[in-house]
Image (cartoon, rainbow, N blue to C red):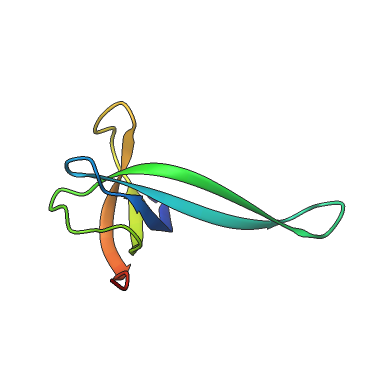
Length: 81
């Protein structure tokens, strides 16, 4: 089963590549408070269809370059211009 993640596009300046930010909330085991963590992923976008601010779904794939191991599946929500 391939991993899937949902995040916001923070950069689309590269050719056929976008950078997304995935945020997760975890419950602290001792203090029982939610901790927010974020991760950045380089994602393959062959059609250059995603723009900054879009909410996208990505899926794990084979290594496409030194940093790209994810590809764009769909755009869930377009950013308001």
